[in-house]
Length: 72
Image 1 (tube, one colour):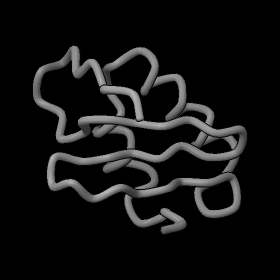
Image 2 (cartoon, helix red, strand yellow):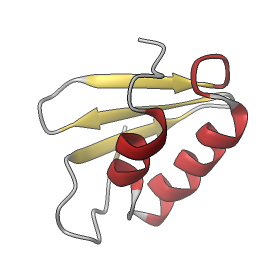
Image 3 (spheres, one colour):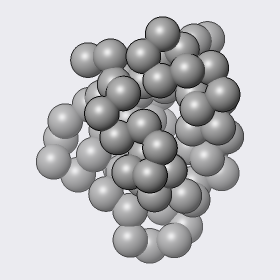
Image 4 (spheres, helix red, strand yellow):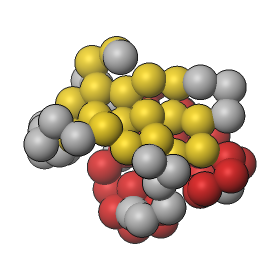
């Protein structure tokens, strides 16, 4: 997993991992959630990948658009 930059300074996301058709997100609680094309949709996962790499906005995006759309 890659450390999340957290440029906004207030994210509960601490790390992420990107695959071809998914992104895994680790939160400060230690829990890891996988958001896949099948569970959250291609557009959402691709946006999450971009936000993860940029290091800002990922937690907000998850809470707003895909909160419970995780695969596992």
